[in-house]
Amino acid sequence: MAPNDPQWGRRGRDGPPDLDELFNRLRDKVNGLLGGGKSGRPSGGGPGDFKRFGGGVGLLIIILLIIWLSSGFYIVNPSQRGVVLRFGKYVETKQEGPRWHLPYPIESVEIVNLSQVRTVEVGYRNSDKNKQLKESLMLTDDENIIDMQFAVQYTLKDPIAYLFNNRDADQETVRQIAESAIREVVGKS
Image 1 (cartoon, rainbow, N blue to C red):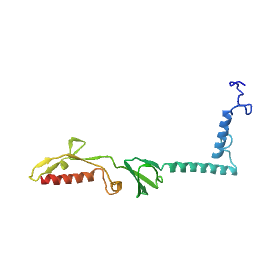
Image 2: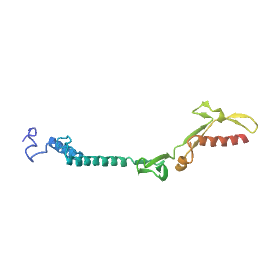
Image 3: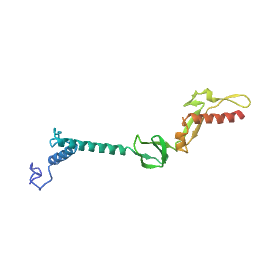
Image 4: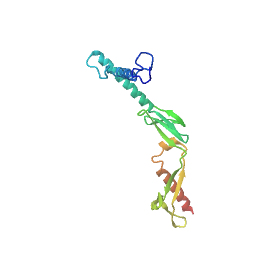
């Protein structure tokens, strides 16, 4: 038998199976699971059809459940911490590595970067030309007015305090504390 013979594979067990035949068998099995007949179209109107339809819906529900459960996987990098919240309430803090939590809406995870150096500008925003006179003008001990602009850099230590103990932790609280501390030093000099 030559390899280019059109009957190759159709003469019993002397060659590989026909791909069309394999594809048709696979299609019939999938249709059987999803409730269709051998032709690929849903069969009509008997009492056994409802049972087949329920099996297909059950399979669909299982697939959706697996997808929903797999959406709970996440990765925490070495410089980060994952804060797990169950219905919005703190549950635990996760260290680095691949992790899993119950998916939304039951649990959520807030990833907090602890090694990032954060910067808050006092007296200006983004450039020296964009001055904030309310913050930058200060009175010294000898009653002179100075224009002081500076930036404060900081890193986080506690992700729970960062998320729950401040309303606007990134900017306003740090800016007010830094401005108050500098005004005290400038006011004494």
